[in-house]
Amino acid sequence: MDNKNNYWKTNLKYLVILLTIWFTVSFGFGILLAERLNQIQMGGFKLGFWFAQQGAIYVFVILIFVYIYLMNRLDQKFKNQK
Image 1 (cartoon, rainbow, N blue to C red):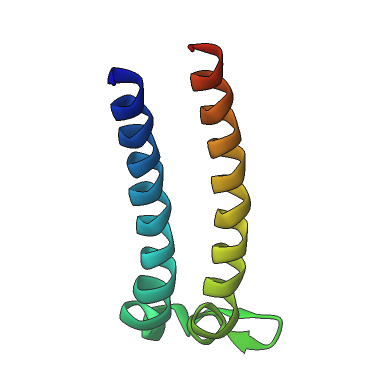
Image 2: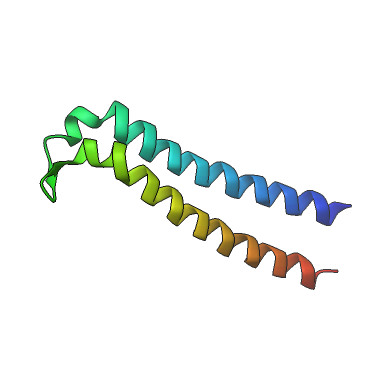
């Protein structure tokens, strides 16, 4: 029973960290800090606009792959403990 609790605690920790990163990028950079970031241009677009339209999506896709990597590692760790 203890292994299951540790597994889910670790899984939830990963989820909270990754969703916090995504929230920060999508809401923080795309909305709250958009005016400040719009003073910087990237590829001809204002950076705040880029984060709101493209950046959050790219970060989300990267976080999916990070989550897959972390969960595979976690599965191997708990599989070896059985």
